[in-house]
Length: 218
Image (cartoon, rainbow, N blue to C red; front, side, top):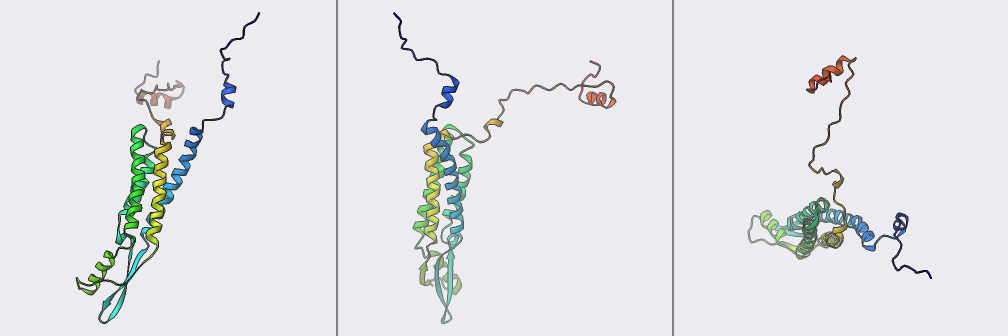
């Protein structure tokens, strides 16, 4: 009477190769491209929108009015500064591993969050135009009139949200992402020198060997 073994047969390489990849592995690779796209696009939007006019108004000068405007950099330079930090963090996240990658990913997410909050908070700011009005009229008590705001602060906040999303993706999937330049890293061991063949019939080879400190007669 035969017996049936309960031990499963060994897995062959062909069988292992035909098995589908783990969902986390596939999701991790897709998240790299998505995070790069979101981070780069978000930082670009923040930098461009910060250079647009955020507020308009006028100042009374000699019985007339002088139109004034302030771009995002004049209102608050924080979103643009954080966008630059986010770009640096987006590159650095692929150059580090382990806990360092976690910290850089958190920095990326916090840069996006900070830029979004700064843009929304300054969306109805009037301080920049008041300062322009005081400078233009040479009157420290002057205030801007007919104040209005544009949608660009909210566009800036939208770009910052993209940066925040890239940081959250890095926090979630960053442990599965490859490190930049890993294949080119050296282990510190000396590389073996390739022996140079010296042709005794060629005088130039003999001179080159002597320059290298080698004995061409061996």
